[in-house]
Image (cartoon, rainbow, N blue to C red; front, side, top):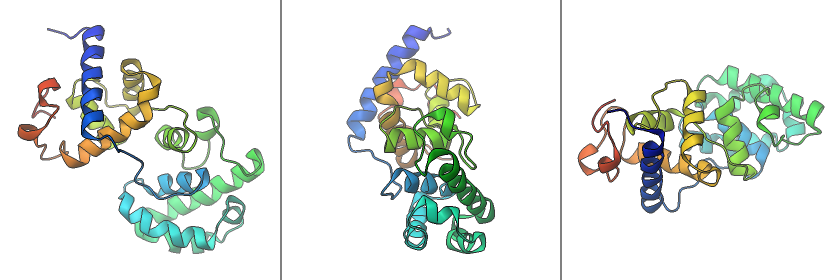
Length: 215
């Protein structure tokens, strides 16, 4: 029997309540001291662990402490500093280009809207929503691999497209739960609902999961 939207929303709220209980102190794992630093760290985190990014960014920001400094940096030097994060040439190119656009079009300040963030080099909806939610307190649903995987397993969406997953989750939870809710889903994905070996037998969300043990 197909679940109605009302029933799905009711179950989604129970999922969120349980996530809040399980992960009351969830927070962004990336190290940053400003919206610009968070933006750069999030770009570097693509296909890289947060722990690795946190080892890299202190040296990067010591060498190029401001968006203006990054905008006039030497690309080869930036590449060397971020090399261990993987895909470093593309990441370095995007970070430098992003800095230049922010300096030229936004007076050196990271913009505070999705519409202005997404066109920046290396910035997609996921990165934009991280910056909006964490740096500026503007609610956004961040769909990374964990959020996408758990949302499908929990039957909160049937989509693989991150934008459609984002829209589905926005329709299930109130805006004030979007940012921290996604961080809690990420924590649960890392701790329990692993991609290859989910711990369904000990998962506190199992009673609410219609696809227990199923990808």
